[in-house]
Image 1 (tube, helix red, strand yellow):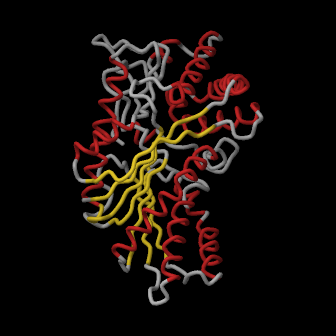
Image 2 (tube, rainbow, N blue to C red; image 1 turned 45 degrees about the horizontal axis):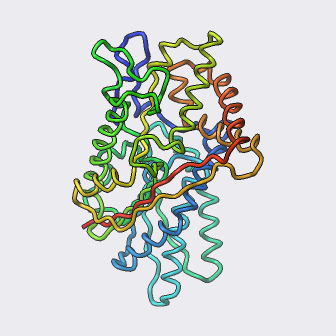
Length: 380
């Protein structure tokens, strides 16, 4: 992801998204590995779509080496689950065709350089054991899987030309390459005071700035992948989105609003300066289906085979306190690196203590949902 300034003032920290934004590393209590069940729920919703698309590409091309890339793989247990499902699906197809051995699989795991790739690689023995066990059932022969880590921003080239058969990306493309320009006036003052994302009180310049950044980023993403994907290859992309054509969809903005409220509580306690709150903006955008379709059409290298929105309930256990903590810990694992950089690490515990309270109170009143967009594209 490209670097950017969060604010032009020398008083505030420089925000280089590519070197700062990463999921909480390791396997500890606040790590992404221990707090990614919400993302897993979204992946499971689209797992059959992903495996079917990958298998269709294999059947149509039957290469000896099948190359799969997972963009924004992050770390923890989710990093290899889609790869395992794809390998298994193609392996079973080959098992039903006794004369056709499974291909060798080249699996390319991509995320920003600050990603905790080590946690993924520590889990490889378990991943290999599961593949061996599946092959041992006799459904299909044991596949050869070659895994590589590819650090870098997916808003640019990552792989050689026409080298990849299938790409998946889950819960990543809503992250922008930078905080959008245009969130500060000519004097350097913030125009979205007290808010870190688009809200009902945001002036029109704010959603427009976010939309323009999404258009630049997603267009560059498509152009880069067009060079790398073989003709007839496919991509399945899943990102947080909205079901409204207007910029405000409460299912998308709600958790950001509560995080802004939590920061406001810290300001009232004298723990955080209001100036820093006003200057904090997240490099995030939840597009509509129409905005995704428009960029695919504009770039022109892919056919849009399928696009759909899915509602995912965040109130999974029926216990508001448990669900509130799950959501809060998930947001902390995602945002802690950026919040610590901007506000300092000392406020993080207090911030998420208040955030947990607010999320729990909301879940006691209503079912909280998010919206995900699933997209299937074929390289022309």
